[in-house]
Length: 128
Image: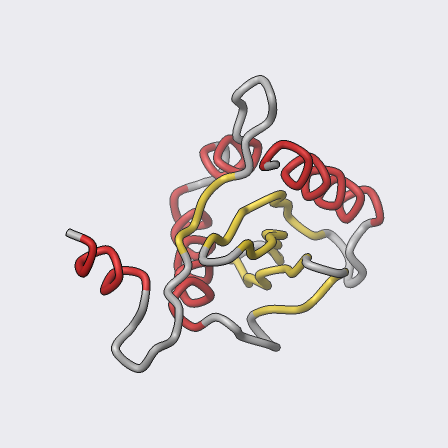
């Protein structure tokens, strides 16, 4: 049993396969999951595909992943009607999806970044 868990966590070449989890608020809500469920299936599929690329290829850089702040990255996803972003952190072998949104401009809106940073701080407080 222990060996199987080890195999699932590490690829044969030693790279970590991240386990993707949704950030959960104190009242049990999962904002990124809820956001995803509100999107059309085609967009959900594109977002899921790029998250999976990060999951199996971490650490990864541009053009798929961009560092936004200390311990905060974004998955950069092109969808049929624009640009989607999923902001996440990595904690050991966990990829925690903190915030997702559709971009309307080149620059990441400050309020979207603040939301992700707030959730990152909540995650850090509550995991202790």
